[in-house]
Image (cartoon, rainbow, N blue to C red):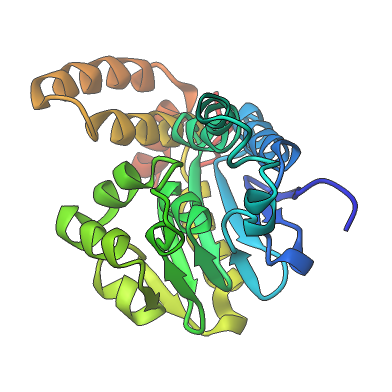
Length: 268
């Protein structure tokens, strides 16, 4: 299939980014694939009108992970001629996706429409919120092919569901059902396949209705709080709050509450 790996569309304050290689189950095979996905996220993040991005996959899979054929042939985003080359290849390929997603100020929702395997699962886990089709399966299956989570998944999965569950998932390489991963706390909700995007959009709209700058500051605060001391989070909270109090949307929200009307936020 020709065209970019990731397509982009937006409605109101919500963007939808779709991994668009259904013939290969949206496996990420090349540096261009990585660049396309990064560019789509950056496009949403750079647009002050966007509050939320939904990430999903075209076809029967969310993302099958890396391309095993390319790995065998030592091309693409995986192993190259030497170990040193491979290390650099990972840093400029899949790590670029992880870094870009971790730095986003907009909220992100993974709408996992089908299997999310390896890198595909870790990309979903990098999103703030995750909804999964009841028929989908997920696996952190790197160990099954004799490698480790080379994309930062060892950190991401722990943050999402705790050490013990992440250890179980990564050390066994087993597949899990949608019900399993909701129970483990990795996903927020499992829904019928034909309801997935409706649920994702409804959740996105619940976020998007809020003042854009407050959403972005809150998202940044949540991310920083993942690895900061409580005292540092308090300091950062006070600084962000000082910024938020000076926005026009804060004034509008207070006025609308007092006047018992629906607020009209502009992002100012």
